[in-house]
Amino acid sequence: MPLTSGPAPAPQDRRPARLVSRTRSSAPAGRTGADIARIVSDPSTPVFVTVHADGRRRYSYWRPYDPATGQGSCYVALPTDECDRLHAAGRITLGEPVVDATRTTYRVRLARTPAKPWRAVTRRTLAA
Image: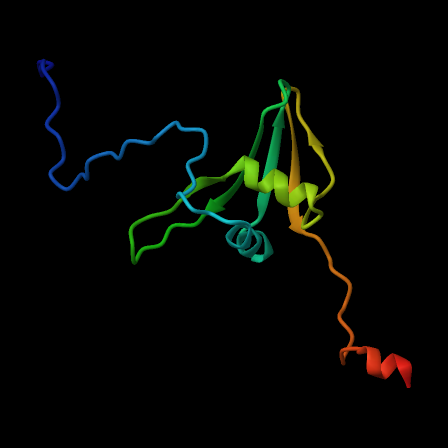
């Protein structure tokens, strides 16, 4: 059988590839600290921060595939500046480091807050 030359025919059911932006943060605009805290608090979406050898940090999580929307099955980056602010404020903590030759990865979790009292203590209660 002779070999055919030329390009192979494209499959008819193939969807066009989506372009991926290589911007500083691929998270949707408008992510606030509350949105990030909600993502970090969800046990089904583990969030990690990767610190590269040059000091660059990237907060990200894995978004599973959603057949209803046809989106997902990719890593999603969170805004580094906002995550750093949450870390500096003590709202998120970093777990044990996993050290590689070129980077160190930490699990990101919400910081535990002390339990609130069952009833609010007022001045009048303290004065009695």
